Image (cartoon, rainbow, N blue to C red; front, side):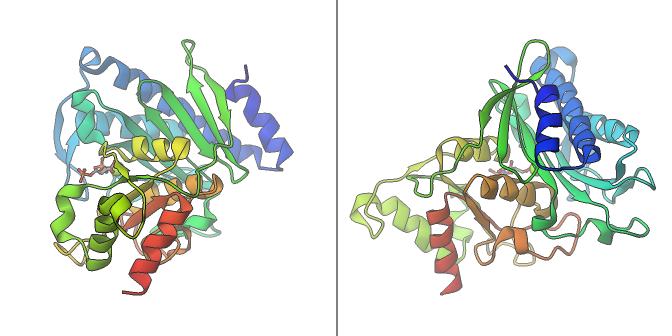
Length: 325
Ligand code: AHM
Ligand code: MG
């Protein structure tokens, strides 16, 4: 049995990764352990229901969105290696330590529409090195490929931590002593898949290439793809990406015609980029249907992006349909 506390120092040393980065990761994980405890108890810890507030994206906040956000901010501000934070639930970045070397971006409780009905939710995080100079919004606006670490904690039937420090992907499971124990090293996303995930209720709003792609999948053996596909939709990105990491699949949240000023629903900096780093480290692929997700030049902390990620063959197929449209 290898706990995170045993694994991390070895992994840092083996790959020459700064111990300060390890300490930031440990702080994120400690906060998520705390959040996991609250999620587990649900109504018994009085954390369910609405907070009666809205976030910068105009979305209503659940009590647990606010609690998870507060736990992460409080913990990270205590770590002197952290220069600043950005959260889905905060309009602007939060400054921490002037000498801090790292920036942490997170969605404290993703999929929170699921929390009151006891379906999996998760925390997603991305860590960047702080550029030289005074902390500003621009300090955070780095391409996904610049991330030095990324991961998520899935609060599901088991609480699992998945992260990468850009030397493979590691999966840990929370035990009864609240320790994360290594349960899987370097899962690989199969290149081919027969499973897709998309919110089909938006079908009539999709652009033509996405309409074509899904129609081809639904045609199954009788269509050009020549095989039958299965579909899943949890409406919890962390659960969806974890399933794909474990057994393959393709996850999409495309741009649609309702509001062409919004390229999609999901956020680049603390949802799409960290998940893309995890999947690409595991042999998968990720794009906005046109270019590699990790190469996108960001323009805002809360910028939205179209998402296609998972098994490489499917992501490439979707990209081709869009690039040739
Ligand atoms: P959130 O950050 O407000 O929780 O929204 C993100 C979630 C993702 O977890 C999930 O993939 C998607 O929204 C589900 O959207 P929909 O409600 O259209 O099914
Ligand atoms: Mg979210």
